[in-house]
Image 1 (cartoon, rainbow, N blue to C red):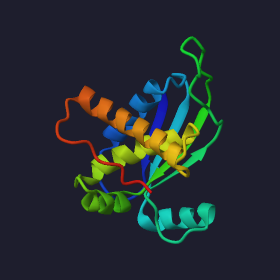
Image 2 (image 1 turned 90 degrees about the vertical axis):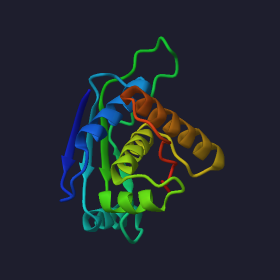
Image 3 (image 1 turned 180 degrees about the vertical axis):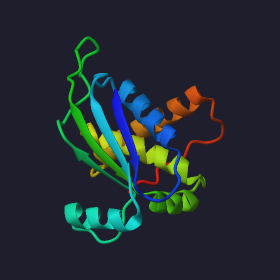
Image 4 (image 1 turned 90 degrees about the horizontal axis):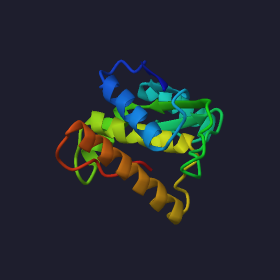
Length: 165
């Protein structure tokens, strides 16, 4: 899997963890191993510009996803997954830090960025949370992926609760 993490935010983030959890999520979702993903970490001003340009909403947000080839996980276990460009995930550490502190189970900015990375991957794969049933499915899958990755890494303590809007 080709995953690029580009930190343009000026904030020190755990780029390796972002890369690792993105790879884990894509593997768990059975995405073709030659698919490509880009993760960009930006400051609040850049995120606010993207949020206004693409969503017509003021203020910075935590994560945005920009799908390219609209890849989806294979529907059957024996089905060969398609290869392609997944797209871009844009993360904002300033918003992530605030959300981590305000969460029911407080956690670090890096833990929030890991959660947001999985959230972004799921959006690239066509998942959404507009309707209650969609939200339950997406957030359940998101928690399972984050928990699985944390267990594989031997990380202890509670996983970050979904703080994504």
